[in-house]
Length: 471
Image 1 (cartoon, helix red, strand yellow):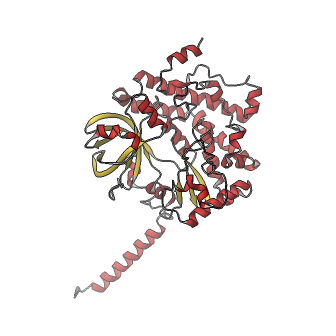
Image 2 (tube, one colour; image 1 turned 135 degrees about the horizontal axis):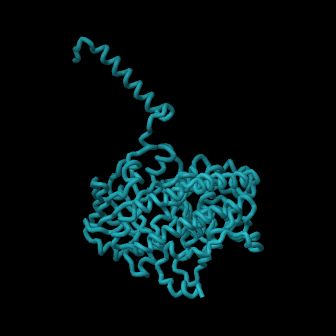
């Protein structure tokens, strides 16, 4: 029995403290108190973007792991992140075409997926999964980095990322970009504990119609949207799936789009997406490489995978189009052919609404002014170059030489600066902003003939092609 003379006061005080803590927990965000879910520890540790982090992969049979890359199966390893050790971590090779071409070109520098909780309840200060991007076809090491920074600047929910020096069994492996994978930790950080559903629509066979990947309404049957639902990140119920289908039905009508789409978010996304000329995307031939977030029947589109952005979508094609002037001036109003556009309702139907179209242009104006004309972009490029250059210089598995890296950075910078000039001209009406208009008049184009697009990164031997193009 408690016999302290002040036991009543102690109990009352403890009860008051408990009530106070409950109020703080419930109203903390409203009162400006940091939320551990929205501001998790990993955001300021692994994803502190001001430095290059250290990751050591400790694995029993690294050569065997690399030789089985095509199987894309998880293998157990121990991971040491900036000195913190995590055991029984799942790791596998990442990528489709990039993985296949890496093999064909005789390399073993694969991008990797790291699933901390694949075998156990592991996490890194709340982080459950991230990827290590190998900079495939990216001599600048910056295409993903810059594209994600642009998205974040425009207020789009974006994966965190940072540069990491990777070792394997204490031996240097190379400079990679760590990217937060959109999974549970990502959803909680951006949308709270009671978040909605997250999907990564993708096709099984590119030869198929893949209307669901393109976010086209087919019918009300759940089975008609396999390319969306089999790639769900969580465990959606039938009610969740029907809610998404209903959003696609509304989108298909082109009317009352606010009932199905976070219009403001989607317009901000497309501002950057169109700027970076990512032809391996929702607005490209494949129509993939994005995440879809649904909550309460409202859809958002989230950014993903930009190593082939900035008009470098060639993937070893025998006859790639390397016309930098064409892509620097790529039209912002019709960023794909009519055949593609009419099958991409998330862009096409929004742009048919005059108010949304005007807002899209207003966002482009704000983006060009604040990100490029202010000098912000050039500062980012040079600061990043200075940060990672010493690591690129010693990267033992790099796809390119140090000189190629420096040229790649310059080319990426010049492409974006010239593109910003063209977009400004398109907004002001001095440069045609549609495919039809540009086919009729290229006289006012921003000249980018000094740019050779493969300098941003292609692995195949292009010297013969480059020589013939200069004749």
